[in-house]
Image 1: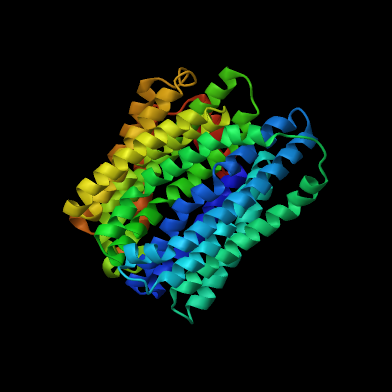
Image 2 (image 1 turned 30 degrees about the vertical axis):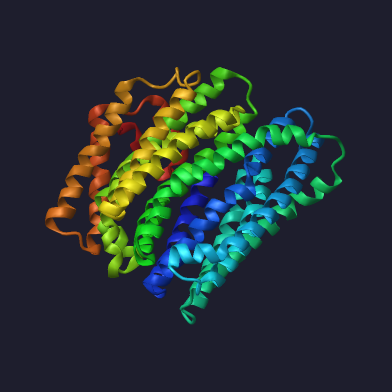
Length: 484
């Protein structure tokens, strides 16, 4: 997790440079159309990937404990299946591109950008499955390097080109460059062994695992994207761009803290057959989210206007501050849901994943259709927050056999209180004193100082937590951990 967290933090910085470049150099309408392309390809990618990336990680981690050769055979067959699914999904996407242009842009003049999005769909789907092999190998450091190098090239390319050509096409081309590098580098380390591997592994075994997972993925992405789809249909591309800017900023929480956790959690849990070990991993994952992600999300909510000013330069994007604040406050439930679904995938309970996705999708669609026409993007944010909450509760219930060893309720209560007190103080300063961009740094320092005081006062940390912090923090700061 150390290398993954560092990589995700560095990748997030590069990602925000990329997003800030788009927000500042593209006209608002074009950024809204760019958001529509990424939204539609994101939904289509669940059909193209169809759970095969998770299948690769799980089966490679599971089989490598028994017979390494069979794990490479399984990886090869899953990748071949991904080619079939990706090409078929891309073909369908290209056919419906004119209709997507009409829905999101109210005309066919932007069909060409959705065609370009089809190329991105194909490459990103294959790249996701190829990454799954390295994840299953538990080569987390290598995976971190591949992603980081690809993101550097992508960001440098985008900044250089968009400074000259303020055109949406180059934003999509930047993603093509990124996924070509991911796919190429991943196959460089895995393709030779996949080609040479001898043995048998039934396609039926793959499909038995991945069909429920693929259906669940489609349903889940609909549940997480329905609010954006409704915004794109009911409102304008500009409104979609504003709302997408808020979602993108909040997404750093998942990229930095959550992705590093779930990347390691899936193969580790999949390769373990001891229920108590898996249950303890689940407990520690939830604990990590409470101690790391919850305070970060509350800080983001408290300084939402400043963050949007930082990455957008202001303009009309500050209208999304309320949406960003609402999404950030409920982001902990998204983290709990993601962790729970990762555990369900790791232990092979893909039908339960599908159940969670179906309920969440239905909730999001109904709430979004009801709230967006009346409240605009705030209604969409409320819909997303409700999905986070409902999805997390259902996920934990379905994982109840592994949730019996969770920490006492007093720990979670203390964690919420420790994050809520500094949030209330900083949010009051932002709302009633000033929310200028220059306040971002002092407000953040003040928030975390208050958070540390609350940790000390509530006695939130255990000796286990302090040992963990001593392990991951720089040498110069370790001596202060004992005071917490």
